[in-house]
Amino acid sequence: MVNFNITKSCFIVPFCLWAFLPLNGQSFDPETGIKTYLAKKYLSFSVGAGSGNFDLSAESAFSNPENPKERLWTAEVSDVSTNLHMPQLSIKFGGWKGWQGLEMELSYVGQKIPSQIVYYDSHGQIYIPPTDGYPDGYYYNVEPQDSVDLDDGFLHFNLFSIGVTGYANILLSQAIKPYFGFGFSFGLNNIQSEYPGPGSFAAKNVMAEYGYNIQDAEELNTTDFGVGFHIPFGIKFLFNENLFFNPEFRYSQSFLSFGSSDAYLKERDRGTLQSFQASIGLGVILK
Image 1 (spheres, one colour):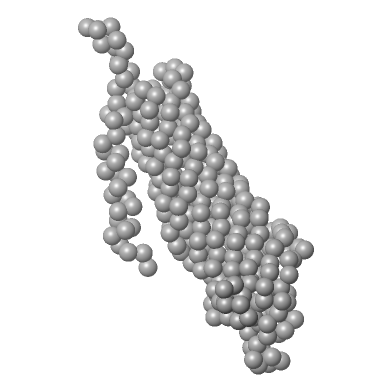
Image 2 (cartoon, rainbow, N blue to C red):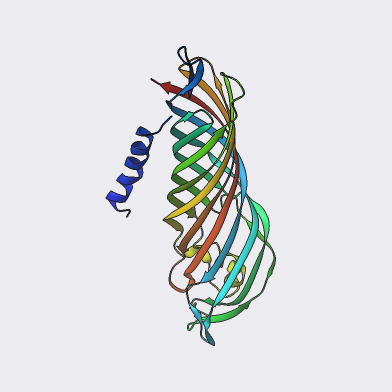
């Protein structure tokens, strides 16, 4: 369970930072004849869609009995395609002054791995748990898999994050403000699967030959902290002094680390979830 104080801080910190933002309007000083920029803040809501890919690196939680310095098995798989299973939702608190901008964001992104064929680069030995035919269990040498069929929804990713983005405005006009930026995020990553672990999944057919059904093990459902970064490109179209329309394109990476499976199949997993997203937002400029 996540500590209450940590969770509470995730919401308090953005509001505190936002309150002190030196945020863009522009006015004319009649005494000096110089244009000055007024600080303004905004609140916006956006919804988006996108796709991406996932790279996984997994290893057994146990050492090789013949060489304790090595893991019992390792497995890697790259460029597994992903898509959204829920719309991307974001609430943004921010502002800009002149060409400078700062934004805090609370967001949710739900992605899944759809049905596809992938290649697992796996090495070592996998331990087949005891069955009626092999009451003491059995060690089986695993090799790279030519092809592995992944079911639709093989992994579900539910990412809840808080992020901070600094961006630069391109002062095109008073009503049209393109921008680009760079930001970091921190949050909770929930990962679910009807299988116990994404690494051991590659050996499910081998296990079945020895009388063990991998789906008899506990299903994966884990929540862990994670970090990431994002690079947004967008435009703010100002309808008037109070409202703006905000299309945005974003490239992001989330770095995941979690434990999966149980008992003999326990494994340690690390992965990078890379996404390309497009969103539409509506913002309110606060007085």
